[in-house]
Length: 302
Image (cartoon, rainbow, N blue to C red):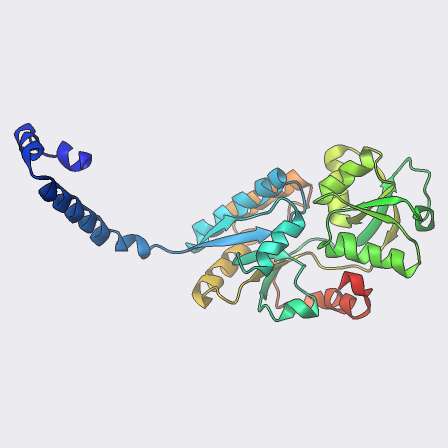
């Protein structure tokens, strides 16, 4: 009513004060109806898709890495992606399993029980090979993984395939009992190590290198896995083909575009990735090693 009154001459506003309450109520309904008639144009706006990359770093650093990238994707594709990340990597994956997001950057969906969820790989980040690792600080007296028996070892979280499941499977294979500590993400696990609360860390080699450079720390590798591909870009089966094609083209075109290359280089510098760490097409075939892991993994890690 105030907005309508401000557009009327003063004498008309005075007349309105004398109107019967029923007439005023009817005018309010008409104003609401007019608003409802205009609003369908909003429904024609393009949807906003939620994008959940796993928490490889702390929340702030994860957001600082991804937000410029998805803003570029929006400018190039016209498809808006909105970052949705949980407090921990397990929380973020829970959003995915609950079908609360539309695009992801993850390697948490290659188990047989999650194949039926219908997520489609359309790209991957192109970086040097990754390795699952068990590492200690360079000045640690521990020289081999057998010395970790009955000690506390930190991992990012229970969903971390490279940094938790691969290393922990190796410890179980060697019959080395440990006490598991989850740090929420890789940075959190390393914080436990530097604070002296754990003796070693299960890690992703890419994240180990980035953390060591950012924190100016040296580590010693006690064990590493076979080489693995970096994480996958995946889309929900609910994303329309035209929007998926537009988003795919934007991600894959970044490394070939002047502005895109600059954004990738700046984002990569934050987390100490190679400046050329862009995105390339994938149909998911590169992730055979991830899928094969579940064929022989201990039951508690499947």
